[in-house]
Length: 388
Image (cartoon, rainbow, N blue to C red):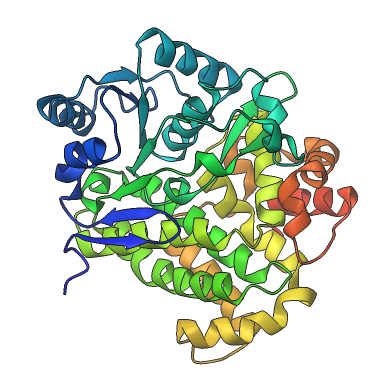
């Protein structure tokens, strides 16, 4: 059986996976009880042919579909509020979340907030606010990724930016899990090489940080290890040739695996990346890719033993931390990831602020070492200078 053949998984939600799977969307909508879905996507995808084709596909299937595209690259609370208004005014009963992480996160949050009376920040994952939600009759969501990165299609949370405080918050509720994820690697063919690299590294970071997170979760560890292996093997191929559909499919699988694995936890790469992205609106995957080796070096003492196994899974000739770290740097260079954080448009003058924000970020709790704000500031400074 080829990886491109359409098949269904159920882990952790229903996943319809394979080349051409998008053709099953109308039937999937109907079987999920949808009659009037709102397709939520980001502003850059609205006029792309595959988006218009998807809308036509659903409409031709007999459903009354609407479109909301007021989503930024880093979705904000105002984007969610506008989406909820569109959902209610259009009389919609469900959501098709379509796009990269921004469209998926916004779509899931819009569907959830359409039934809430409390503000979105009440459901910050750092608090038990999710228990206060109106959880009955939540609109069903079908998530359709058009990048291979965040894995948000199989997650129960979304990252939403607070524009007032310039912080990224994780909004969580178990009912935010899509009823189905439709993963068609054909939808990623048109993704440019630089975005393929950036989103692909996001998937890799999810797997890597989940594997290194403290705690006992062998299921997450197994998924994370295979996700790192798949990304390492197939990301360079997808970057070199965007029409390599086998590589695209394996990266789409790695993305969903990363989001499954990080139920165990994330870490300092995301903590620092969230701080940078919230202040400067940088691309999340690219920011992760740039800062990753600097955080990995800072975590060396705690993760060195993990690297013995990872090196064997990757098939490296030499086992151990140094071999994995050299592999990571070589992979970054091969797919064109900048070495210095200054390439993101930031500089070392904000080190103190970045350190404080990174420490406050909820993902910092999953880092294998509890770094201080000063230590995160130092990591940020080294990333700006390119000093490993």
